[in-house]
Image 1 (cartoon, helix red, strand yellow):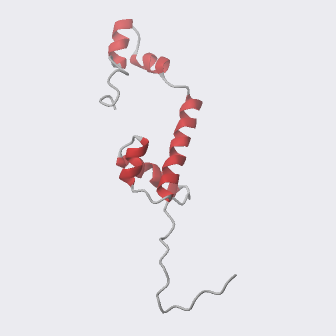
Image 2: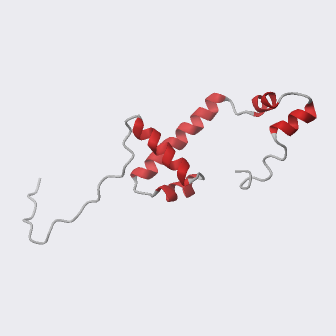
Image 3: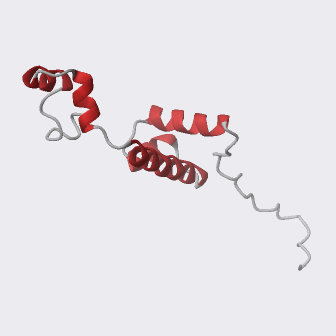
Length: 106
């Protein structure tokens, strides 16, 4: 991720902690996103991934669109399926054979 956002971070938590005379954990706690905000953002991303999969996109297409790896998308969908969420696109509709009788109007 650092390659995608090279200006986001110039020092590691360990380097910052050493310079400030505090622990790396303290640095991570200070700069961390508040948990409710993180969980809300993660839930939105999960819903987007599931929605995109249901529209028939491949794991790679979803990964490209949401800025994740293909493996991250696969893991997200796997966890969703484990909780009973259907993540698969609907089956493709096939046209009836040419010799099939026409459907009766409803």
